[in-house]
Amino acid sequence: MPRWPGVNPAAPPSLKICLVLRVQDNGCGIGSETLSSPLSIGLTGMRERALLPGGQLEIRSQPGSGTTIEVRLPLSKNEAVVSLSESDKTTLLERELAATVRVGLFRNEAEAVREVLDTFFAAKPQYRIEAALAMWKADEVSLERAAEIAGMNFFRFRDLMIQRGITVELDTAEADARAQSQQIHDRFM
Image (cartoon, rainbow, N blue to C red; front, top):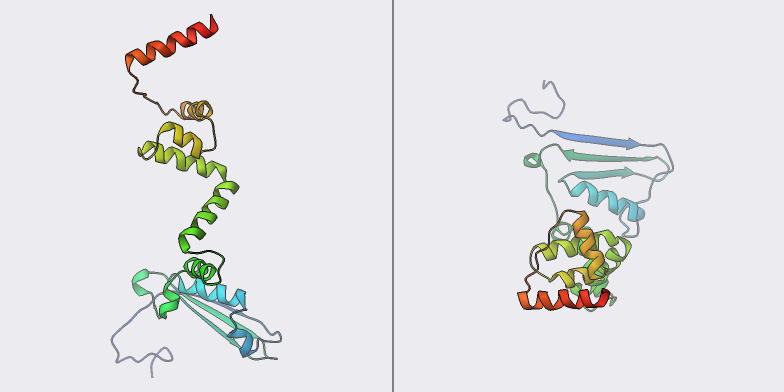
């Protein structure tokens, strides 16, 4: 008689360490049509979150007899039990992006991504500033263009860089520098 039910002592040892979370209630239960409905956003979200790290979600319910939800999450990627269909291999964001194009909200995914980024940067202007600084540091844009991307004028952007300890070296011909210096001198004297 095996010590653990369902374990064959003659089989080679196979140990999969998982975290198991089981929630059970004695409520009215969930009907099978609700369990399989794509409109059951909460259940769909739970399934996707369980599948992401290679886990499994099982929902057992019958109307009138409560519901049991069990999630099994592997504690090591090597031990992950992955049984994903082709559609499950893409992330929810990738599927949402493709769906917005399919229904005609955008002509293509690139257009959707541009609008999402514009909205994101409008909501979080500090991230646009960081992106502008990173592009300037990588020599992808000029200092003036980086200031424009950050939504600042040149002088405000330069002051921000100085506050952060970022030095700016400008290549200027000596004659141009003297002429500009003279213009400034003449203007204020």
